[in-house]
Image (cartoon, rainbow, N blue to C red):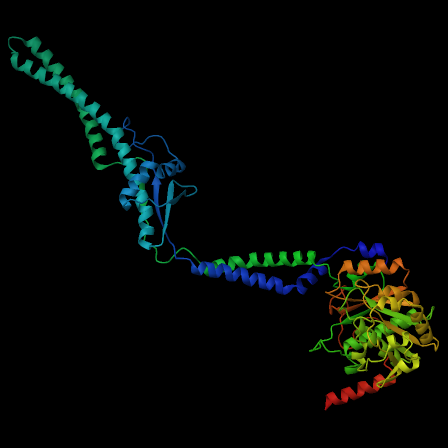
Length: 544
């Protein structure tokens, strides 16, 4: 795969699902926390009761029209403003003893009804609040009606009294006039009195109508109200409902956190990540996680469990190294890493054992990490005499080499005493001579060198090797570290041939290869006769 192809690869749905699966606990924890907080906060709140009263908006009475008729139409929205006006609120205070809690009022769509809702921590008060507002509103509108009708009734009474006075005067004149002596005058007075009585009748009817409206209390603006009833259950809080509502919020929040962490996380997580960071450098091995209980101790999985998936992965790495040496034979291979703790010594140890078991002639492992040597711990060998002893001329190479009892074809040159200046010692001509003497027998020399970024030791040694192998660790090594390491090795023309990814994710297509029974990266290597015997013994022990 070319560098452009790797760099241009776009994330697909499987990539997003992989990210969510890897960090699934972030989503779970975020959701649980969100639901718990919502439920707990709701459960700690005091209960609140809610009650609703309802009334119908009607046009106000028009005193200028006949009885039973109404004035112009009014909108519920206008009456809601009146309901919440200062005069109505003042009447509510008088009804509720000096307080006027806030209410919500809304019109019922498509009707003339208005709903008035009040809330309180006491159920009886919750019902009393909207009822007080409706009553105060009705009283206010009734008072407005009375105030509008009273002047009209007074004017009608004035007109009635004027006609009555006229009738009284005409009656007195009739009493003083004789129909026998003054028939014409008498008849004229009778006609005038009858006309006055006819005018007085409609006025009396109007006054009676206005009196009825005032006394009965015709309401202008509200009618046919439904009072609020005392609620039996609180309207809020609702812990279960709030918890369910918080569930999708928690999921979205958790997913957002996952992708935020993914964006901020610069670590290598997969084979594709490693190839992008190295410029499409081949990944020669994908080593799955080895579930050791005590990671502080040195373990060699190729010895302790030779048929396990990690052992299969190291066989695949061995095969890849062997293929690299077909055209250009490899006599000295350097294994290094970008920083500390990425598993380079573990890789060197297992790779050396696999190469020796495959019949490689004279596999020699040299611990060139003169700052934090650990190779002797993996092979359980003494470290009092080693590589530094040879470099200082204290002992010959043959005396410092140690045979590994479990594998006759493998020799180990431990680090020896730690020197005061490892870089200067590794850069000396003596180092080149010792490494050259180890290559004369035609075998393969593996060098365990320090990380590239903290110190220059690995860069110094790289000029005397045929190939350099960079070991990384998924979830630990960052892209920036890998890029800087490749850049430093390229500056000195180090023969960087490939990489190894430790802690590789399993079972994720496109982001590593699964390691199950008989499943590993690359073609399945053939077991050596000795490995076949060890595998048979292990199966026999398991059967027993």
